[in-house]
Image (cartoon, rainbow, N blue to C red):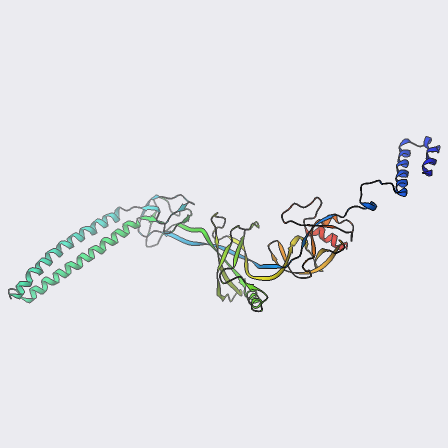
Length: 417
């Protein structure tokens, strides 16, 4: 305070500018307050800042379904190539391209006039054959008692019976001809063999189609449930089998392995599929095994021929540790995380990670249950080695202001340790 009185009494107060004098007064007042322990400022006790809050996850062992991500291709459950089965000119197209059709629904109408005529001709031939049969049967019936009375020769009777049997054969042939004519007449109306979505029309009205060439008219595909075919390395399959045989992993069940499909934009379909089978033959050129999954597709997001990513859960780790990927800093020296110690200070920890499990990493070594790993808030740790305040991290929650959302800030904070 004596220094303040000297300044007030000094002639410099009158010669210097008012601004410089006021600045000197502020500095001296602050110094005096600091020396005399005056309660200035809004900091923590002792004049320090409160420890920054960081989002952490507490390590705990849990059952982890080991996922393998593989490329796959979508295949429809059923495919029907609608082709012409009779010759003729297409008169009408009876469907809308790209629409859903039902089994048995009419798709095309081929000119049926020639087949209608053939059907009526077959009916007439059958009627003639039936008339001849009636006459031959009556004659054979008359000749039988005459043969017993030796009124006719045995050869005449045999000829009458043969004529009756020939007439019966003509009737059977006539019935078959009617059936054939009826089938061809029905083929003039082209129907869908299965229910599904029909593509574009491959012929138009007026086109001449041929049964000999089996002219393709359209394609119907059943896509409400689709197959996804993919391949897996033989080495990976053998590794999983050995691990399960050693008791390190549990099998996901025969034919019950869960399958998730990921689209090109990274979106995972909400409905999971199931693994149908695993081929027993290894491709000699690639060393891969073919697998097939069945996936529900009521929304039509999966299209035949589309390439997707398949997340397959074939085994389960009974006691595994997973952490969010954003908590890990990956570098040439290895993978590291920041662990909050007992004194509240973050420390750099070297870990060994395994496969990716969605947005998490499977940790193979370096972490123990109960430890707290920092996930977000790296940019708040301005002073290396300073204590932090850990708060539970919620997945999907918005990060606090200034918090890091990637591994780059984590790397800068870790390098400062």
